[in-house]
Amino acid sequence: MPSARLAAVARRAAAQQQLAPRWTALGRRASWTAQQQPAAATAALGRAARRFSADAAAATPPAATAPEAAPARRTVERPNAISITPAAAKRIAGMMASRVERGEGQTLGVRLGVRTRGCNGKSYTMDYQVEPPGKLDEVVEEHGVLVCVEPKAVFQIIGTQMDFVETRLASEFVFHNPNAKGSCGCGESFNT
Image 1 (cartoon, one colour):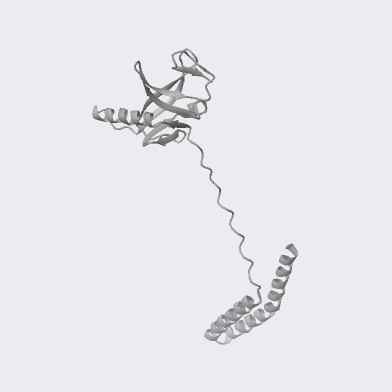
Image 2 (spheres, one colour):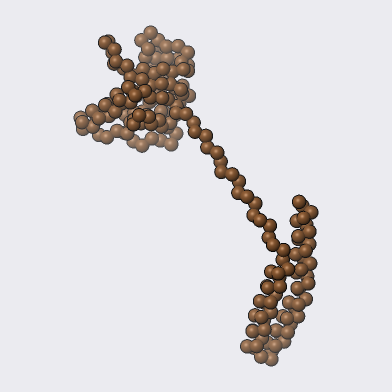
C-alpha cells in the first residue's frame, strides 16, 4: 500500500515537471506581449492559465477515495438505579395531586436520598422534587411518575425496588434493597 502511494506521488511530480517549462514559456511570452499590447497580454496570460490548469488536471491521477468515517459509538442502555412498583407509582401520583389541591405548588416528582441516622446506620429520605433535576441526579421515570435519586445515594440503593404497602397497622413505602447487609427491627434503617 505505501509503495502505491509513492508511485502516485512520483507520477504527479513528473507530470508537473513536464508542464512547468510550457507554463514559464507562456508566461514569458505574455510578459513580453504586455510591454507591446497590454490588453492582448492579459488575454494571453488568461489563456495560458486555463490551458495549464486543464493540462495539470488531465495529468494528475484521480484522488484516492476518502477514508471511511469511524462507526458511530454504540450506546448501551443502562438499567434504572431503582425500580418502582405500580402501587408506589400510584401513591406518589396521589401525593403530588393532593399537594396541588392544597395549593402548595406543582411538583415534578419525588427526590430519594440516604442519610446517616437511625438505629442501624442509614435511612431513606423522600422529599418533593420541585426544581428540575441536577445534572448529576439519577432520574427514573416509571409508571408515569418521576423519582430523582441523589448522587450520593446512588451506590447504596442501586438495584432497589420501591414499593408501597398498606397493612392494618401501617401504610408506608418499603424499599427492597439488595445491597443492604442488615436492617433494624422496625425496618426504617439499614447498613451496607
